Amino acid sequence: MSIPAGTIAGFVGPNGAGKTTTIRLLLGLVRPSAGSATILGQLLTHPERYLPCVGALIEAPTFYPSLSGRTNLEVLAHLGDYPRSRVSQVLELVELSDRAKDPVRTYSQGMKQRLGVAMALLPDPDLLILDEPANGLDPLGIIQMRDLLRRLREQSKTVFLSSHLLGELEQVTDWLVMLHQGKALFSGPARDLLDRRSQLVVEAEEATQLDLVARIAREAGYTVTPDNSSLRIACPLDFSSELKRRAREAGATHIVIRTKEASLEERFLALLKGEHE
Image (cartoon, rainbow, N blue to C red; front, side, top):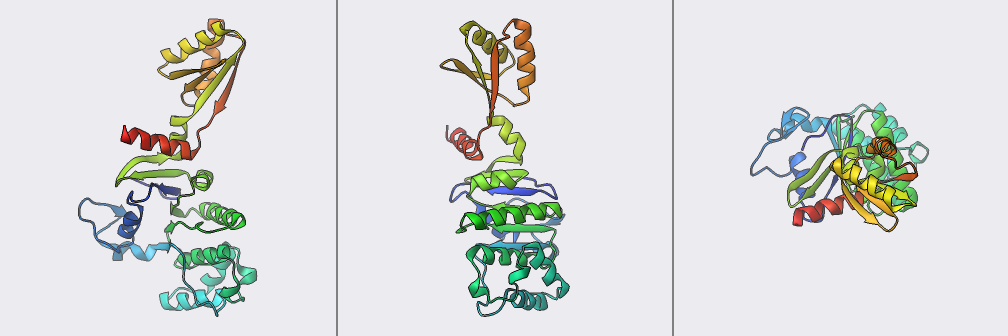
């Protein structure tokens, strides 16, 4: 798999697919038994060369609960020899400036997760690795985490985001990697995967008009499935205008074409099904 700089890349797969192992490899916590990889232009076998440019939040972050959010960050900034001014910058980025002086024990779970992201951002990393950052959050916390990820995109950060919340990934990712049994079933732009599983739904009052549309779609190489008084065509959504033109030329002038985008969950399940067949 290859992930372009400046993207939010979603990393998904069932339990046991190899997500945690991959993250441990990226962070230099385990050594690869085979294969090769480069991170930020450096070989995976030399993590000391790229880790200074990587920030990570793995599972639930740990803090000094009696200390304030700001003090927790200042301790880490001192240990990492990061500029003190960076503390205020990351607090503003994760929208915790107004609660920075409060003890962490008074923070909600969502605030703690955002403070954990702030910790990972202290070194101003080129690559940010987040493992289930929305895990255990309430709806408001999930929305706040989503907004934070979008702000990181605006700063051109590269984010490698592992999550089982497929609906959330669908809203924030530009790139997707789908893993199953250690194998990447898909790695590429999220839009490409969307088009693979999208459908056009064609409706008409006359069966003869549907027959014309079905013939046109099949001649173009797409799968057509009759569904009562409509057709479902598995094709890229941008085929809609071409289908309308060809149908009109063939005499099918009284048809309605709607688009049906598959959800990320549907696309993922379809990939898994194809792998098992």
